[in-house]
Length: 152
Image (cartoon, rainbow, N blue to C red; front, side, top):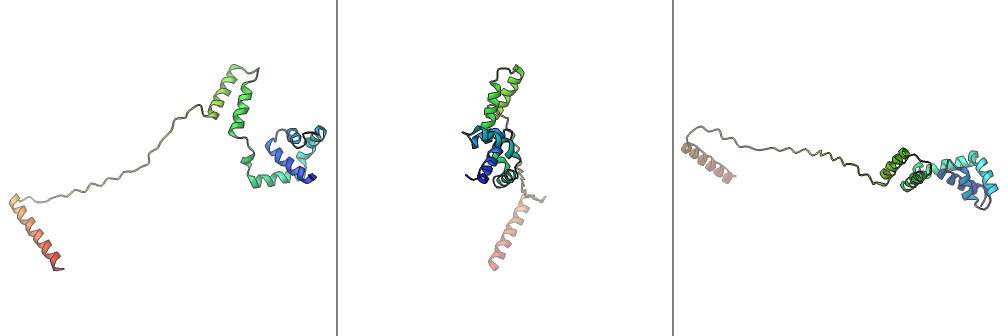
């Protein structure tokens, strides 16, 4: 690999472990600790590395270099296993671990936004005459309607 390619790869590794450039350098040079130490001290501020990081972040997005849910759970779990952790911190980390893993179920909030518009259609009969009179008017109206429909 050329030096430019090595710097591009270091830039990618450094995005994964930004707090530990030596770890990124050791991944790049696993058999050469002295070169990894030199790279860890010099390359993070190198303009080529910085430009390569900017290009990688633009192409892949910043979120692709953040830890996954499994990485976060593993980190919390390893802190819980420490020898010098007080009970309060253990309880807090345990709760955080349980939330990350989904052991604690959150109540579901369902909001019903359905609007039911009911329109009742009511026929109002405005007739105060006797039943016989009303029936006669109704028969005449029906005859007029049927005669009108047959004329067309």
